[in-house]
Image (cartoon, rainbow, N blue to C red; front, side, top):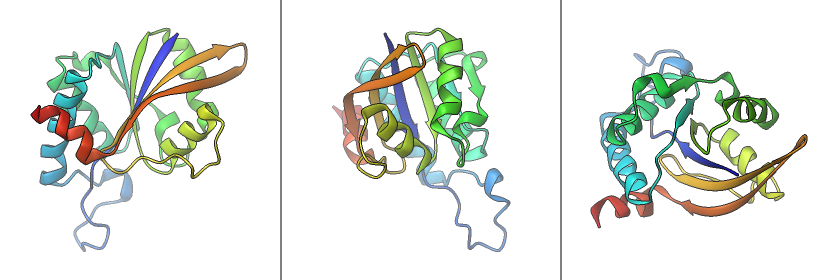
Length: 168
């Protein structure tokens, strides 16, 4: 079995800011980066020790992945940018990458609604039945039987509740 932990990046700088770069280059806000550190500490409390971190190539997701890696003492060489986690990617794009990775625990950092679609597909629920807020995370036990990919939800934590684990 493979465990997949899905984490949505934190809040990025406002698109309405005249100095805002292109969407792919929007960074996390200072507050979001600080909250990502707390979320990473919470993941450690929950026993999340990924062997691989896959991240959307967008800056805010990569920043989140690097913050999490630093807090969990995961070497940077175990962070990999993945187009399969870019905002408009299809869930099917990620499954071949997960299979090829051959790891027991993979952390994926991405965007809404893409992560929502991944969760929905894994759990066999309607597309908007499952969703992650910015900075939230979910853990799913994957079953990779043949071409089929299904999952069993282990936990889903909104950002405030996730961060509360870092303080306990």
